[in-house]
Length: 201
Image 1 (cartoon, one colour):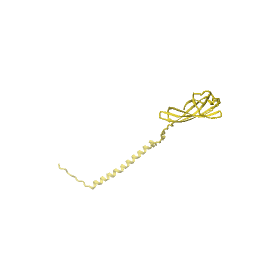
Image 2 (spheres, rainbow, N blue to C red):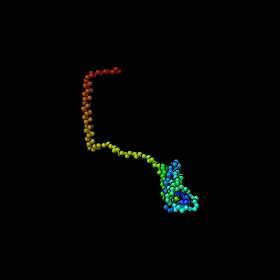
Image 3 (cartoon, one colour):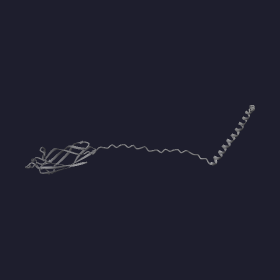
Image 4 (cartoon, rainbow, N blue to C red):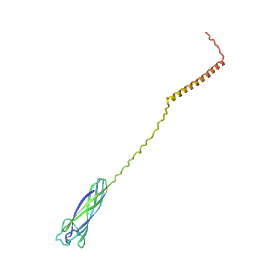
């Protein structure tokens, strides 16, 4: 937030006399902002609306300092006026999107035929909202149970008798097969006559 103070002196026609303590003013800011990449310029006016109370004792001389208010709406011992004070303020652009002004601490100090006025200006800035990138959250890793092969172990006492039995079965089958083969060869020999061949020397 930026803040600054304004001061201004207003003088009035001598026939109205001196300014009294009950005098008041209201200050209304009207502005527009010019925003560039490097700076922000706020231009506008302060509309000063005054209700000034006079003693109506004419002064001898006109007061030359300050802003002279010649035309006023007079009602009894009070005079009303409006005056526009132009202003321009610039400051660095720090991602500013909009600007707003407000006025407070208005003071009026009467002094014979003029009054000194002051007020504080508060400049509030609205910054740009930064976009937040969405961060992808990885999906949780699921644990997959791996089935272990099941190994069935048999006691050695059970395995050895089974192997001995298998060997006995194989021996029996071989014993049954050999006699059949011998009978076949003997029958084949009887079917053919035996011929003796004498080889020449």
